[in-house]
Length: 118
Image 1 (tube, helix red, strand yellow):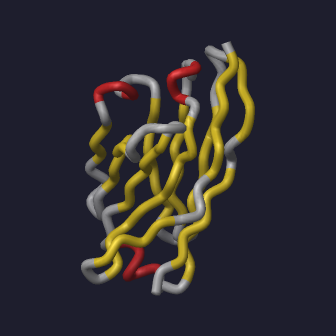
Image 2 (cartoon, helix red, strand yellow):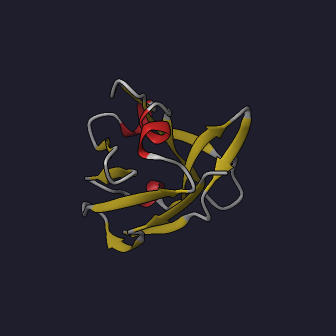
């Protein structure tokens, strides 16, 4: 069973940047390397939404609301996924979750809070 752990959240002023990290454990580097990894976010009172994805071939996909501002990347040797977030605005305030498929089931981390002050 893959375990995911996010870190890097915090309080930042509008226009600032944060880099989120997601560490995977309970899986080999080979198994991790073939997984598509995602970042989701959930703002208070709203549904969880996909922010960005990166495939095993490092193809990336972004939600329209973060294009040009966020960058997803991965380090397979370290079993890590990152989300570089620039030009943050109050609308980006949410809990950010790392996600992957675990043999047909969803695997989620515990989330990391990002708060952007105006």
